[in-house]
Length: 137
Image (cartoon, rainbow, N blue to C red; front, side, top):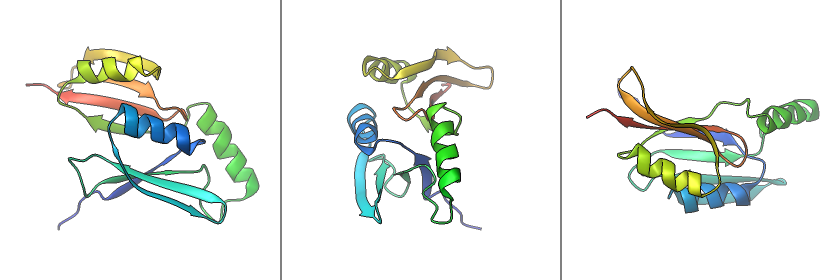
């Protein structure tokens, strides 16, 4: 079977702040920026992975989500309770320094984990958890 990850989704409450973070701090490309029926979706991705994209979408972007569901998701996002993304990097410490200097919320400084990676963690401007891991040599 031939399966590969293509797209994942993160909720964001301010696309302009998200673009500034994902493009300007992390160096991801903006691949698409679409507005439809009062909502906006921005697609970002790593230049080294042209077939993998992260869609930055409003909380509760599902057309079947009720207003109460959308409000609940917005509250969970604000509390940092929604899941995030794990990125790989060749230099965890250098990446940590750059992201910290951007003012991002630091959750964990770089540390060696017993399962063979060095990693660190931040929250993006919307509160999503982002981990960055470097594989042990």
